[in-house]
View 1 (spheres, rainbow, N blue to C red):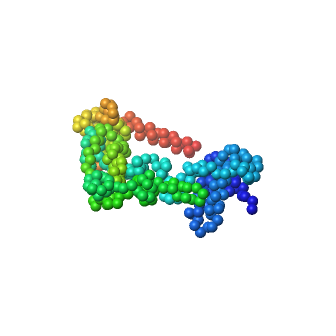
View 2 (cartoon, helix red, strand yellow):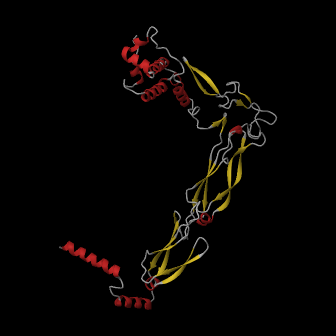
View 3 (cartoon, helix red, strand yellow):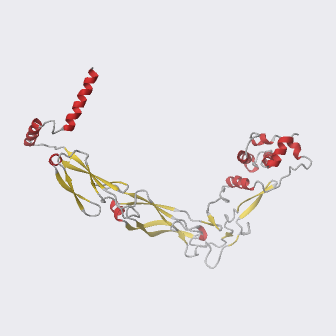
Length: 377
Protein backbone atom coordinates (compact mmCIF):
# COMPACT_ATOMS: atom_id res chain seq x y z
CA UNK A 1 0.00 0.00 0.00
CA UNK A 2 1.49 3.36 -1.04
CA UNK A 3 2.03 6.09 1.52
CA UNK A 4 -0.04 9.25 1.47
CA UNK A 5 1.63 12.45 0.32
CA UNK A 6 3.07 14.30 3.32
CA UNK A 7 1.82 17.69 2.14
CA UNK A 8 -1.70 16.30 1.64
CA UNK A 9 -1.63 14.72 5.10
CA UNK A 10 -0.97 18.11 6.69
CA UNK A 11 -3.21 19.99 4.27
CA UNK A 12 -0.55 22.44 3.10
CA UNK A 13 0.99 23.39 -0.22
CA UNK A 14 4.52 22.39 -1.23
CA UNK A 15 5.68 25.96 -0.69
CA UNK A 16 4.40 26.19 2.91
CA UNK A 17 6.81 27.87 5.33
CA UNK A 18 7.78 26.69 8.82
CA UNK A 19 4.97 28.63 10.51
CA UNK A 20 2.31 27.19 8.22
CA UNK A 21 3.66 23.66 8.73
CA UNK A 22 3.63 24.00 12.50
CA UNK A 23 0.12 25.41 12.55
CA UNK A 24 -1.20 22.71 10.21
CA UNK A 25 0.47 19.92 12.20
CA UNK A 26 -0.93 21.22 15.47
CA UNK A 27 -4.44 21.37 14.02
CA UNK A 28 -4.32 17.90 12.47
CA UNK A 29 -2.66 16.30 15.52
CA UNK A 30 -5.37 17.60 17.81
CA UNK A 31 -8.07 16.43 15.42
CA UNK A 32 -6.78 12.86 15.08
CA UNK A 33 -5.31 12.26 18.54
CA UNK A 34 -6.40 8.81 19.85
CA UNK A 35 -7.59 10.27 23.14
CA UNK A 36 -10.05 12.41 21.26
CA UNK A 37 -11.17 9.53 19.05
CA UNK A 38 -11.55 6.55 21.42
CA UNK A 39 -14.04 4.81 19.13
CA UNK A 40 -11.97 5.25 15.95
CA UNK A 41 -9.60 2.32 15.44
CA UNK A 42 -7.73 4.13 12.67
CA UNK A 43 -7.13 7.33 14.65
CA UNK A 44 -3.78 6.18 16.08
CA UNK A 45 -2.47 5.14 12.67
CA UNK A 46 -3.54 8.47 11.18
CA UNK A 47 -1.93 10.27 14.08
CA UNK A 48 1.39 8.49 13.47
CA UNK A 49 1.27 9.37 9.77
CA UNK A 50 0.77 13.05 10.61
CA UNK A 51 3.71 12.93 13.04
CA UNK A 52 5.91 11.28 10.42
CA UNK A 53 4.95 13.85 7.79
CA UNK A 54 5.76 16.77 10.03
CA UNK A 55 9.06 15.24 11.20
CA UNK A 56 10.23 15.10 7.59
CA UNK A 57 8.86 18.42 6.31
CA UNK A 58 10.08 20.50 9.25
CA UNK A 59 13.69 19.44 8.59
CA UNK A 60 15.09 21.38 5.57
CA UNK A 61 17.42 18.53 4.49
CA UNK A 62 14.78 15.82 4.83
CA UNK A 63 12.24 18.02 3.09
CA UNK A 64 14.58 18.65 0.16
CA UNK A 65 15.17 14.90 -0.17
CA UNK A 66 11.44 14.19 -0.01
CA UNK A 67 10.66 16.88 -2.63
CA UNK A 68 13.18 15.27 -5.01
CA UNK A 69 12.72 11.54 -4.37
CA UNK A 70 9.45 11.22 -2.50
CA UNK A 71 9.06 8.42 0.06
CA UNK A 72 11.91 6.52 -1.61
CA UNK A 73 14.36 8.95 -0.03
CA UNK A 74 13.72 7.35 3.38
CA UNK A 75 13.44 3.70 2.48
CA UNK A 76 16.21 1.17 3.19
CA UNK A 77 17.96 3.35 5.75
CA UNK A 78 17.52 6.53 3.79
CA UNK A 79 17.32 8.63 6.95
CA UNK A 80 13.61 8.71 7.63
CA UNK A 81 13.79 7.57 11.27
CA UNK A 82 12.40 9.74 14.07
CA UNK A 83 14.97 11.44 16.25
CA UNK A 84 12.55 11.85 19.16
CA UNK A 85 11.98 15.00 21.16
CA UNK A 86 11.56 17.14 18.05
CA UNK A 87 7.89 17.73 18.80
CA UNK A 88 8.15 18.49 22.50
CA UNK A 89 7.15 22.14 22.24
CA UNK A 90 4.15 21.42 20.02
CA UNK A 91 3.02 18.31 21.92
CA UNK A 92 3.11 20.19 25.19
CA UNK A 93 0.81 22.82 23.69
CA UNK A 94 -1.52 20.15 22.31
CA UNK A 95 -1.82 17.97 25.37
CA UNK A 96 -1.87 20.97 27.68
CA UNK A 97 -5.02 22.18 25.93
CA UNK A 98 -6.57 18.71 25.81
CA UNK A 99 -6.00 18.18 29.54
CA UNK A 100 -7.08 21.64 30.65
CA UNK A 101 -3.55 23.00 31.13
CA UNK A 102 -1.76 24.72 28.31
CA UNK A 103 0.03 27.10 30.64
CA UNK A 104 2.35 24.63 32.32
CA UNK A 105 5.38 25.67 30.30
CA UNK A 106 4.45 29.28 29.65
CA UNK A 107 2.41 29.92 32.77
CA UNK A 108 3.62 33.49 33.23
CA UNK A 109 4.35 33.03 36.93
CA UNK A 110 1.10 31.35 37.97
CA UNK A 111 3.18 29.05 40.14
CA UNK A 112 6.36 29.69 42.09
CA UNK A 113 8.27 26.55 42.96
CA UNK A 114 5.06 24.52 42.55
CA UNK A 115 3.05 26.83 44.81
CA UNK A 116 0.10 28.73 43.40
CA UNK A 117 0.17 32.50 43.55
CA UNK A 118 -2.89 34.09 45.12
CA UNK A 119 -5.35 35.92 42.90
CA UNK A 120 -5.18 39.68 42.37
CA UNK A 121 -8.17 41.51 43.83
CA UNK A 122 -10.10 44.56 42.67
CA UNK A 123 -11.73 47.13 44.93
CA UNK A 124 -13.91 49.93 43.55
CA UNK A 125 -13.63 53.12 45.58
CA UNK A 126 -15.57 56.35 45.12
CA UNK A 127 -14.29 59.64 46.53
CA UNK A 128 -15.59 63.20 46.49
CA UNK A 129 -14.10 65.97 44.39
CA UNK A 130 -12.99 67.65 47.63
CA UNK A 131 -11.09 64.48 48.62
CA UNK A 132 -9.46 64.37 45.18
CA UNK A 133 -8.46 68.02 45.64
CA UNK A 134 -7.02 67.70 49.14
CA UNK A 135 -5.94 64.05 49.14
CA UNK A 136 -6.81 61.78 52.04
CA UNK A 137 -6.02 58.58 53.88
CA UNK A 138 -8.93 56.16 53.92
CA UNK A 139 -9.57 52.77 55.44
CA UNK A 140 -11.24 50.03 53.42
CA UNK A 141 -12.49 46.57 54.37
CA UNK A 142 -11.65 43.80 51.90
CA UNK A 143 -12.87 40.20 52.26
CA UNK A 144 -10.05 37.98 51.05
CA UNK A 145 -8.14 34.74 51.61
CA UNK A 146 -5.34 35.06 54.14
CA UNK A 147 -2.73 32.57 55.31
CA UNK A 148 -4.01 30.13 57.92
CA UNK A 149 -2.35 30.89 61.26
CA UNK A 150 -3.08 27.45 62.66
CA UNK A 151 -0.89 25.64 60.12
CA UNK A 152 1.24 28.67 59.10
CA UNK A 153 -0.07 28.29 55.56
CA UNK A 154 1.23 24.76 54.99
CA UNK A 155 -2.22 23.16 54.92
CA UNK A 156 -1.02 20.35 57.17
CA UNK A 157 -2.31 19.70 60.68
CA UNK A 158 -0.01 21.18 63.36
CA UNK A 159 2.65 18.65 64.24
CA UNK A 160 2.61 17.18 60.75
CA UNK A 161 3.89 18.36 57.40
CA UNK A 162 3.22 17.79 53.70
CA UNK A 163 4.78 14.64 52.28
CA UNK A 164 6.39 14.02 48.91
CA UNK A 165 3.91 12.99 46.24
CA UNK A 166 4.31 9.31 45.40
CA UNK A 167 2.87 9.75 41.91
CA UNK A 168 5.46 12.23 40.62
CA UNK A 169 8.23 11.73 43.19
CA UNK A 170 8.08 15.40 44.18
CA UNK A 171 8.78 16.92 40.74
CA UNK A 172 5.18 17.95 40.10
CA UNK A 173 5.03 16.43 36.59
CA UNK A 174 4.45 12.96 35.21
CA UNK A 175 5.06 11.31 31.87
CA UNK A 176 2.27 9.63 29.95
CA UNK A 177 2.93 7.26 27.04
CA UNK A 178 1.18 8.21 23.83
CA UNK A 179 2.00 5.49 21.32
CA UNK A 180 5.68 5.66 20.39
CA UNK A 181 6.43 8.86 22.34
CA UNK A 182 5.90 10.25 25.85
CA UNK A 183 4.19 13.42 26.96
CA UNK A 184 4.94 15.22 30.19
CA UNK A 185 2.07 16.89 32.04
CA UNK A 186 1.17 18.28 35.46
CA UNK A 187 0.82 15.64 38.14
CA UNK A 188 -2.92 15.04 38.73
CA UNK A 189 -2.32 13.92 42.31
CA UNK A 190 -0.53 17.01 43.68
CA UNK A 191 -1.48 19.51 40.90
CA UNK A 192 2.19 20.30 40.31
CA UNK A 193 3.10 21.07 43.92
CA UNK A 194 5.22 17.94 44.42
CA UNK A 195 3.67 17.47 47.85
CA UNK A 196 0.40 16.12 49.22
CA UNK A 197 -1.36 16.68 52.53
CA UNK A 198 -1.96 13.37 54.30
CA UNK A 199 -3.29 14.99 57.50
CA UNK A 200 -4.96 18.32 56.59
CA UNK A 201 -5.39 21.25 58.95
CA UNK A 202 -8.91 21.32 60.39
CA UNK A 203 -9.21 25.12 60.19
CA UNK A 204 -8.39 25.53 56.49
CA UNK A 205 -9.15 21.97 55.23
CA UNK A 206 -5.64 21.67 53.83
CA UNK A 207 -5.78 24.83 51.70
CA UNK A 208 -3.35 26.79 53.86
CA UNK A 209 -5.63 29.84 53.79
CA UNK A 210 -8.94 31.03 55.21
CA UNK A 211 -11.39 33.78 54.24
CA UNK A 212 -11.22 36.88 56.38
CA UNK A 213 -12.13 40.55 56.15
CA UNK A 214 -9.06 42.75 56.27
CA UNK A 215 -8.90 46.49 57.01
CA UNK A 216 -6.35 48.35 54.92
CA UNK A 217 -5.23 51.96 54.75
CA UNK A 218 -5.18 53.66 51.36
CA UNK A 219 -3.48 56.98 50.64
CA UNK A 220 -5.31 59.07 48.02
CA UNK A 221 -2.87 61.64 46.60
CA UNK A 222 -4.03 65.20 45.96
CA UNK A 223 -5.01 65.77 42.32
CA UNK A 224 -5.86 62.14 41.56
CA UNK A 225 -8.09 61.71 38.52
CA UNK A 226 -11.13 59.60 37.82
CA UNK A 227 -10.30 56.06 36.68
CA UNK A 228 -6.83 55.95 38.22
CA UNK A 229 -5.73 52.54 39.55
CA UNK A 230 -3.77 52.23 42.79
CA UNK A 231 -1.79 49.02 43.33
CA UNK A 232 -1.15 47.65 46.80
CA UNK A 233 1.50 44.98 46.30
CA UNK A 234 1.05 41.79 48.31
CA UNK A 235 -2.35 42.81 49.65
CA UNK A 236 -4.37 40.49 47.43
CA UNK A 237 -5.39 36.88 48.00
CA UNK A 238 -2.95 34.60 49.80
CA UNK A 239 -1.59 31.74 47.70
CA UNK A 240 -2.64 28.17 48.46
CA UNK A 241 -0.36 26.30 50.89
CA UNK A 242 2.10 29.11 51.41
CA UNK A 243 2.13 30.36 47.81
CA UNK A 244 2.94 34.02 47.00
CA UNK A 245 0.25 36.60 47.72
CA UNK A 246 -1.49 38.45 44.91
CA UNK A 247 -1.93 42.22 44.65
CA UNK A 248 -4.87 44.50 45.42
CA UNK A 249 -5.90 47.02 42.77
CA UNK A 250 -8.06 49.94 43.84
CA UNK A 251 -10.01 51.57 41.00
CA UNK A 252 -10.96 55.13 41.87
CA UNK A 253 -13.98 57.05 40.64
CA UNK A 254 -14.88 60.62 41.58
CA UNK A 255 -18.46 61.52 42.46
CA UNK A 256 -20.25 64.22 40.49
CA UNK A 257 -20.09 67.60 42.21
CA UNK A 258 -22.99 69.94 42.80
CA UNK A 259 -21.21 72.96 41.34
CA UNK A 260 -18.01 71.97 39.55
CA UNK A 261 -17.22 69.87 36.51
CA UNK A 262 -13.68 68.67 35.98
CA UNK A 263 -11.58 68.42 32.84
CA UNK A 264 -8.08 67.29 33.72
CA UNK A 265 -6.69 69.85 36.15
CA UNK A 266 -9.25 72.52 35.23
CA UNK A 267 -12.64 73.10 36.86
CA UNK A 268 -15.73 74.58 35.24
CA UNK A 269 -18.73 76.16 36.91
CA UNK A 270 -21.91 77.69 35.46
CA UNK A 271 -23.36 80.57 37.44
CA UNK A 272 -26.71 82.27 36.68
CA UNK A 273 -26.85 86.05 36.85
CA UNK A 274 -29.81 88.39 36.54
CA UNK A 275 -30.65 90.22 33.35
CA UNK A 276 -29.99 93.51 35.11
CA UNK A 277 -26.52 92.41 36.26
CA UNK A 278 -25.67 91.25 32.76
CA UNK A 279 -26.84 94.57 31.27
CA UNK A 280 -25.59 97.00 33.92
CA UNK A 281 -22.58 95.07 35.21
CA UNK A 282 -21.91 93.91 38.74
CA UNK A 283 -20.02 91.34 40.72
CA UNK A 284 -20.46 88.13 42.70
CA UNK A 285 -18.39 85.77 44.86
CA UNK A 286 -17.67 82.13 44.09
CA UNK A 287 -16.48 79.53 46.60
CA UNK A 288 -13.36 77.55 45.60
CA UNK A 289 -12.22 74.07 46.62
CA UNK A 290 -9.33 75.51 48.61
CA UNK A 291 -11.98 76.99 50.98
CA UNK A 292 -11.33 80.52 49.72
CA UNK A 293 -13.71 82.91 47.95
CA UNK A 294 -12.96 84.69 44.71
CA UNK A 295 -14.72 87.81 43.47
CA UNK A 296 -15.81 87.87 39.84
CA UNK A 297 -16.52 91.25 38.19
CA UNK A 298 -19.17 91.24 35.48
CA UNK A 299 -18.68 94.02 32.92
CA UNK A 300 -21.62 95.94 31.47
CA UNK A 301 -23.32 94.15 28.57
CA UNK A 302 -22.08 90.65 29.43
CA UNK A 303 -23.64 87.96 27.24
CA UNK A 304 -24.69 84.44 28.20
CA UNK A 305 -21.78 82.00 27.87
CA UNK A 306 -19.10 84.54 28.78
CA UNK A 307 -16.23 82.80 30.64
CA UNK A 308 -14.08 84.22 33.41
CA UNK A 309 -10.80 82.53 34.28
CA UNK A 310 -9.56 82.26 37.85
CA UNK A 311 -5.93 81.21 37.66
CA UNK A 312 -4.64 78.41 39.92
CA UNK A 313 -8.10 77.84 41.42
CA UNK A 314 -8.54 74.47 39.73
CA UNK A 315 -7.25 71.03 40.77
CA UNK A 316 -3.72 70.19 41.93
CA UNK A 317 -1.55 68.48 39.34
CA UNK A 318 -0.12 65.23 40.72
CA UNK A 319 3.63 65.20 41.34
CA UNK A 320 3.75 68.92 40.57
CA UNK A 321 3.40 72.23 42.40
CA UNK A 322 1.27 73.60 39.56
CA UNK A 323 -2.49 74.03 39.73
CA UNK A 324 -5.22 74.03 37.14
CA UNK A 325 -7.61 76.94 36.58
CA UNK A 326 -11.26 77.55 37.45
CA UNK A 327 -13.48 78.75 34.59
CA UNK A 328 -16.70 80.55 35.50
CA UNK A 329 -19.35 80.66 32.78
CA UNK A 330 -22.24 83.05 33.33
CA UNK A 331 -25.76 82.32 32.14
CA UNK A 332 -28.24 85.21 31.99
CA UNK A 333 -31.51 84.30 33.67
CA UNK A 334 -34.73 85.55 32.07
CA UNK A 335 -37.11 87.04 34.66
CA UNK A 336 -40.23 85.01 35.46
CA UNK A 337 -43.54 85.71 37.27
CA UNK A 338 -43.45 89.41 36.38
CA UNK A 339 -45.63 91.87 38.23
CA UNK A 340 -47.74 94.38 36.34
CA UNK A 341 -45.27 97.15 37.03
CA UNK A 342 -42.28 95.03 35.96
CA UNK A 343 -44.02 94.16 32.73
CA UNK A 344 -44.78 97.82 32.05
CA UNK A 345 -41.16 98.77 32.62
CA UNK A 346 -39.88 96.03 30.30
CA UNK A 347 -42.37 97.02 27.59
CA UNK A 348 -41.30 100.62 27.94
CA UNK A 349 -37.65 99.57 27.74
CA UNK A 350 -38.39 97.56 24.58
CA UNK A 351 -40.04 100.59 22.97
CA UNK A 352 -37.11 102.89 23.61
CA UNK A 353 -34.43 100.31 22.76
CA UNK A 354 -32.34 100.95 19.68
CA UNK A 355 -30.32 98.77 17.39
CA UNK A 356 -27.22 99.67 19.36
CA UNK A 357 -28.71 98.11 22.49
CA UNK A 358 -29.10 94.71 20.82
CA UNK A 359 -26.46 94.51 18.08
CA UNK A 360 -26.32 90.72 18.00
CA UNK A 361 -30.04 90.09 17.48
CA UNK A 362 -30.32 93.07 15.11
CA UNK A 363 -27.45 91.79 13.00
CA UNK A 364 -28.80 88.24 12.99
CA UNK A 365 -32.27 89.18 11.71
CA UNK A 366 -30.71 91.51 9.15
CA UNK A 367 -28.68 88.61 7.76
CA UNK A 368 -31.74 86.38 7.85
CA UNK A 369 -33.74 88.91 5.82
CA UNK A 370 -31.00 89.07 3.20
CA UNK A 371 -31.03 85.29 3.00
CA UNK A 372 -34.80 85.19 2.48
CA UNK A 373 -34.56 87.89 -0.18
CA UNK A 374 -31.94 85.88 -2.06
CA UNK A 375 -34.25 82.85 -2.09
CA UNK A 376 -37.08 84.94 -3.46
CA UNK A 377 -34.86 86.14 -6.33
